[in-house]
Length: 385
Image (tube, rainbow, N blue to C red; front, side, top):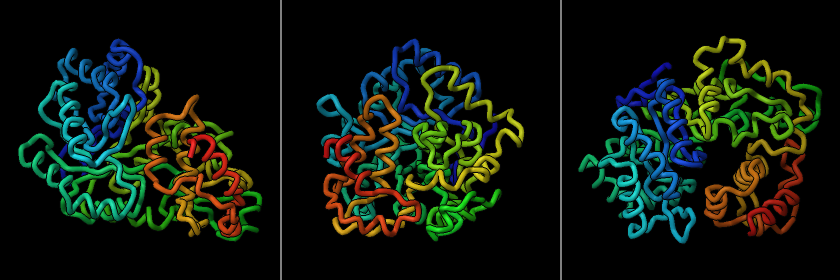
């Protein structure tokens, strides 16, 4: 296992981490996965999920193995459990007991990384950083209850604000080729051509806002840990991938780890075999890691009709964040049922797909020919609003 320094925190983290979101099952199941992680040298765990059972199983597993101190844990502030479901909350009457519950279930008195949980709106970032929520974070940091301050977001604009802030030391950010890459041309006629090509080694082909974010994070020493590295499994399935071809886990991992400032990718595991599948990256040769060769041969028609979250459809007259709605829809559609986390993230958008007036203005701006109004209708039915 290779280790990287997480920005300016000084923490040495395994470049492959453990994203605890999907770790359900029994304590024995959890123990098996944690043992496999430890045997492989994985030492960073992201624990945002508020589900008491998952928290307890992970915490009990670390206690049984006597290994809490070898793990660097990202524990989230603002991820709460209310009425038997996940709720992202900023009310300190909910936030404080939820974080105390996380500490108790992990049998610890500190979190290595105290993560301000899931901010995807610029206004909310400013409100949190100037209000009582961040005052609470500051108190925890001063007391040593959180050793370093982080923030999770899917929005490059919010991520940039965090990177520019002296108060935020690292971010958890969604990184994968589907979220990053744009077509070589914005001309619809070009998109309908036979093949698409990508620059193999650089930020050409990556959305400029995201490319600038990665470079700025590197410059400021703001470490990045990665979520959604497989796009919810979508990139591993040719029929679901926006590229029309499947990437291997090793290729997805390599993509994330070759972005500037990225220290570790949080991979979700439910079995020891999943751990082995990810850790195979450490011994893979250059050919096995080469995602660019796969994408360079992707049929360009694979883009047509599929959202790649580029944002060219904006602005929406009623304020729907169309790429993000599509992203959450695609993540949910990959699962047998809609995960509570994805449902809550979707509802937190405020203006959801149900507000679509089917004006079709966005469709004329989409370089991929996505039937946006139809997609909004599908999302509204799936999420119920």
